[in-house]
Length: 83
Image (cartoon, rainbow, N blue to C red; front, side, top):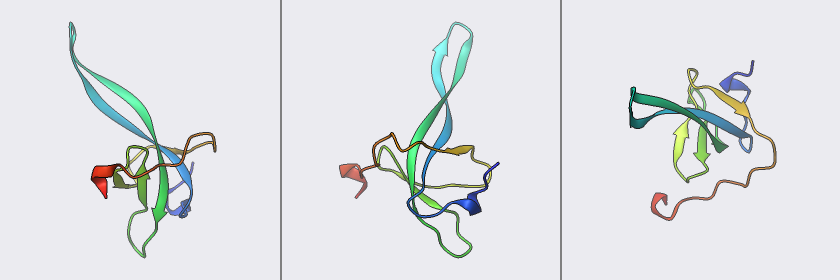
């Protein structure tokens, strides 16, 4: 299994996000989805910084589930409001 220390700037990954999907007849349900991201920087002692497909920046932490992505998704572009 890959570790966050294996990542390098330019690597394309997908990060698993789990979110609540509103109320259903059985209560709130959790929904998993993969979000494309590109590693932007690696600092000494800092977590890798990734730009998500929606333009947001996030740190890739040890507890996060991620996987290397195929080269088929388009490169993340900054959202106009994230600049």
